[in-house]
Image (cartoon, rainbow, N blue to C red; front, side, top):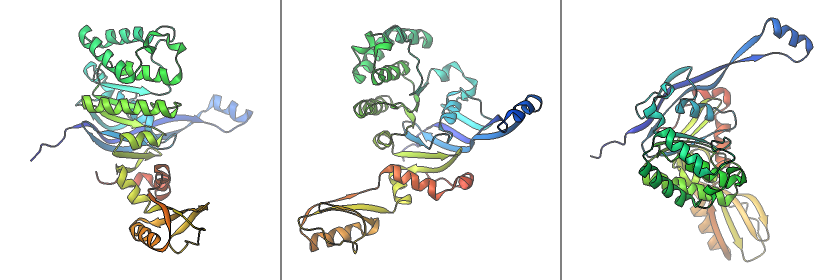
Length: 340
């Protein structure tokens, strides 16, 4: 019997509450707040629990303000939890132990760590000194990552001369020079063009394959999630709405598929086969229950001269919207995650 995969990240009933000031608009309220300021507690993260086995790449999804970045900051040790427990590689992140900091990295797509006026290679050297990486190991890892990211020429230019995509690749390289075992990636492809997004996704997949790194990824680009993650955790208002397989997510929350059929004749009325979503120039899209797609496709092929027929799952963005619709924000705290 194979041994179970060790758990790299374990989170139990994690909560982060911020105390924020509040007041009404207007001069009178402003003066009153100088004497007696009122506050309210806001749960940015409200009792989150999950485990991530070693080597998994997990998508951490949700709308703006859902609690994703706050959770990553607690996992990386930047924020101290209000309550709950975190264990990453056997460490408590908030203690910020040197051994833990050497084994993880946090990449935030909207934050800079490279020095603006010098080449990235010089910033890499600074990271080598900070992490006390032996010279031979540093050069071997640096050259390997530079080759994988195809930035051999870019790292010799001042960072301020790089495009956003070029700088983002250099930022990722700098974050991985110490070969972290845990990667927290917060929108690593934000603002990049489609080609650059694809290159960074390919690099992250290869890094995970070579080093067995555990990755927790937040992204609003669903192409990132679909390319890298078999499992997703969906969070909203600080609470987990879903935790399970990406494929199972679609099955649970969107029990329909789209049948696209191109007919070699004048488009007939196909409403008897499913809900007609569109009909343009002989190309008809039907919304059909997943259990019926095979039979509907067979009936269409038998009844018409079909030039092309495809069956598509709904876009993952639409499925996630269904998750939010199925679990109202007020009920999020009581929602049970899908068994892992």
